[in-house]
Length: 71
Image (spheres, helix red, strand yellow):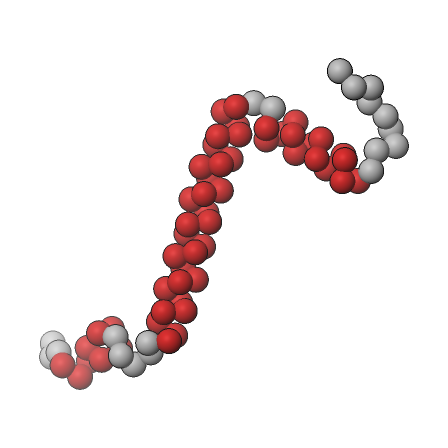
């Protein structure tokens, strides 16, 4: 086991803390991966939908449905 020193760089201390919190236990590591993947998917879907809606504004059913439906 390496000897701990008190004068490590900030990046080294951050990496060591990240390892101790996330990677050291397999269950926490896998949970972090699954939660990160889910969050990335949600973010990608939201951004994609907003870009698509912005490009196709006025051409989608949700934009023109008021012209063709009566309640």
